[in-house]
Image: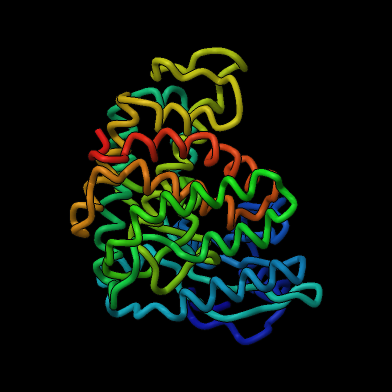
Length: 344
């Protein structure tokens, strides 16, 4: 590959790509997900990622790469303006071991997940606010650049997906009743549709100098969807791992009342009452609802739908099931709190 950024020849072998660069190749990830990929980063002379090669070891991984390429190629990049360098561009396809490999432009920056897991990062309101502010600024600009048409605030595909995925669970019937009650409060709002990433969590966000410098892994993306979905996914995944480095049964540093006692403790902490972290998330979601002319008091309801959405779409079935269980546990109180009055 003589020129970084030049289109890769269709179905060039990955071995040829690597041999052409000679050195500066980093294996940045080997995912264990059912559709996991092997990701190679080809580093340029300036030490920055120049080209990324995502290798599919299975048919389901190939399908995921094709979905990612479809979203990225469907974007009108000219509309992205200054955000264009923060979104990968498809350079072409290669092959390895009889399977496809997607070749993309590399993006600068450090994974936000690295900062997230540094000592007491999530225990300090200031550093958490910095993360949320950076993501909020990027999302606002990206959604404005990709908006088009109108869509319901509520994702009406969730129920059918849950039915197909969890038909074996006794919990399903109750969960669908609760989901309908949640979505009844959201579907009355029509909002501008936009392109969404679909899996916006700290592990898919790159940052540099306090701003979002890149967003990667677009295989769950949709060209037109509700603009709240990415904010909700980010807030929920941020909450989920707050107790990651805390011994079982112990209190989580910086978060009064949060204990690492069972799966999803961060969700319960977020939705249970007024805390500094809950206030940060409330502002993050409510401000977006207000800009969309939707009721900002529905921030908890929107988060509940997001829990059900993760249950519907997460690759790992056990991970998805945990989300459905927590949704069914937390939904009744939030629904009851909203009946007959605005939520606090």
